[in-house]
Length: 141
Image: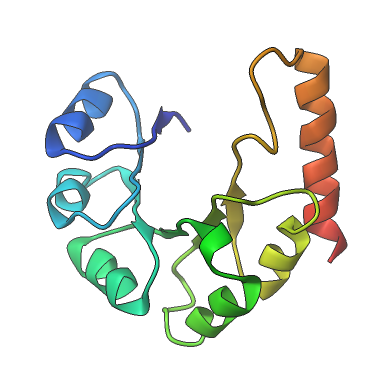
């Protein structure tokens, strides 16, 4: 699925939609952006249960705990007790090979990866090696 990240305005959503994108990833809970994403996959960034429920009420498809490095897997696990089970929760920001398994074990349906996967100048082989390591680590714990 192709889409865009750091989508912060309804105009951004329209541009992604016009380009054929189907995924909208936002750093925050903006009801206008979520509503504009109707028919697309909308994954807004949230940190508190109040933000999570506001995003779901606006029509979010799933939620990304962001920045995850400001919380912990235990924090996510506690939120899983109140957020509806059918809602996918992603850990984004600070996810590494050392902690991805902990996030998955806590209830994350997935993770957003940045510098743990790619840094400028890396070869495709290096990225592939990192990706395989992250997948293995996610399955370990």
